[in-house]
Image 1 (cartoon, one colour):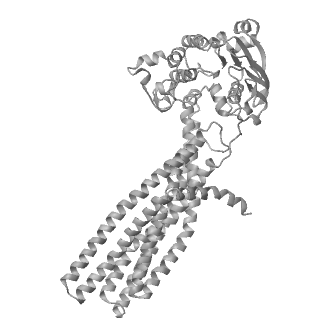
Image 2 (image 1 turned 135 degrees about the vertical axis):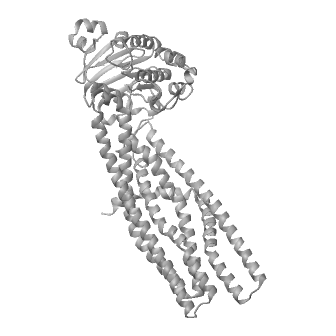
Image 3 (image 1 turned 30 degrees about the horizontal axis):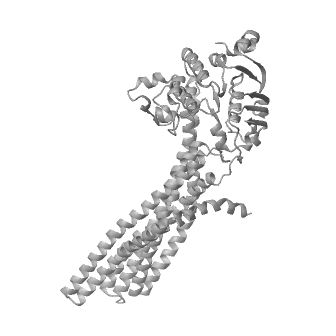
Length: 566
């Protein structure tokens, strides 16, 4: 029964081991410097005890001066070792967090989706918060070791004064760690649940931002907000639970550390009163009892951070170790090939069959929006070939035999809700900076008026998700990006739903002109786009029920006329 759990947790352990292994150098130097810091902190009360002892016994100015010089060395060591030790560790921590963020983001951006039940908002949370918390292990281990050094030095110094004091520190530290290890497990499980709920709330926010305009359109915004309030409240309540557990942990640690420090102080006082230790050793013991609380606090807090780092690593492992949804092939399609849909059954599609010849402009009028979305998903390779029946062939080769890179380079499927990124108009149209047809794409998509509105032209700034653009401007910007790619096969899904009728007519003519001689498929109900197509396929109930030019269908098919006439 333990084998599945072992397999599930091994990726998280591998992530933590990888982080520790590739930061060995900074961690060694950080451990040395932080060990010097803790040793210096612990040596301070020892030096004070020696000063008191020498002053009372020898009453020598030379001994006093030497002791003061020793204190200056200790203070300098403490200051410099902390400064440079934390600088090294925090730089390594930040660099490691960046590496994991890039790796998680790369998994989310791969052409082949991974088989993981997480939304984009959840993956974003994992790539930010969980990556940061996992990288904290780089600081945790050196701080844990350096705190242990301080406790050992204090125990040895007290043991030299009286063995009972040294044993008291060792036994007390072991007892504190035993109690806190139980609480740290509770923190780990609570933190995992909190991270999952925060990620779900983040995913809900991303969904709401994307669909806010249509939600307002049909009055569903209040229901959506109630749904978000529910998941947000769940995240808040879990955060309160984690805060309570953390508070109980911190309070328990502080109380136990204070009890140990008090026990050391009282024991030393009793031994001094009984004449078993001298005044200098008493001063040292009292000073160590105070100074030891800081390394004990760090030492007792480290298990909590280890559990948090492990919980975050487990969430990162959900993304990093998830297998791809499908294994793509390695073939490349023939240049200028045709597109063939052969008896495809998926979602609402029922034995869908049609062929688009190379260089042809074909429009598909889908009576059911779900069928249009299913067809676009299949063509975009968002659906694995083994998840649907039938075959999609590009240039005579099945989609499953082609590499994803080859499919993306040969065939571009532009979704109706294409994302707009923060940057400029130019970087949104030509992200790679290699397109030679940007002016033609801008003109064909009727984005020229947007460019002309701004002094910077194509270098005009665009906010995240195109927040400073209207719906029609965002749609035309996405269309310009698709046209600028100049792919062999271009599939457009409802590219003009947010523009006015006059602009739509101009876009339709421009696209047909620009794409002349290139294979183009437009899934649309726009009369303007249907009219410029070489032929129109009517998609009803998942199958092609009619095929002709737009004008012939308007004249002969009453259902078609009712569906597309405006």
